[in-house]
Length: 231
Image 1 (cartoon, helix red, strand yellow):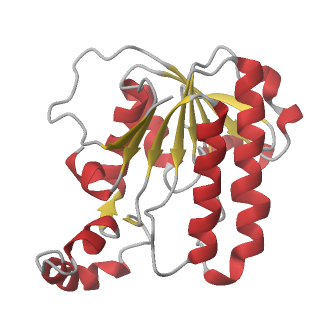
Image 2 (cartoon, rainbow, N blue to C red):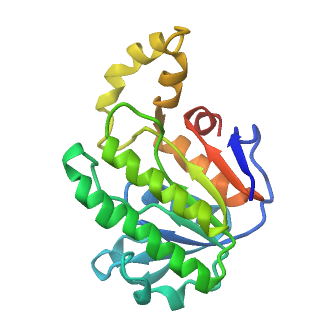
């Protein structure tokens, strides 16, 4: 399997994308609540892994799969007929002191997901990773990097989506840093790092994830912050 460099999204939206059957983990989280309705709007079939307590949070038209993302036996028989997997599971509000949770939830859920993909015959794995390298949040970045390595070793066609911080409902405070980003993105000495660790919106992320669903790669595709912004 070949590994590609970060690639931009197409400049124009496809009018008639191939319809997919998408299995989504983390469908009721921050990104899932935006992504699932958009996939449904575009005509894709969506099956969402969800706990019983969150069933009511799924939008109409989404097929609920009741299970636990850390226990593959609880959902593996219900993945079929999905051909695409979108993995959004992760510890909410990541912080440096949550290193153990990153291993027990973020990384463990990737292992469970990959075990399920082997049984269900998934052809494309989309992983919500994180920008890397980064000078902070090292435990979080390390677990996401390990997750990427497990996915590469699986042999699946994969898209790694690498935001740093996603702006959206309840997450607008970093907007105060926009003038600083504007400056350091224009200085040669800091430009590369500032772009890699730049801010993106939830709308940009949703478009990037939809593009990933509709544009499966032959090998591994990386969508970094500049590529996400172009979607």
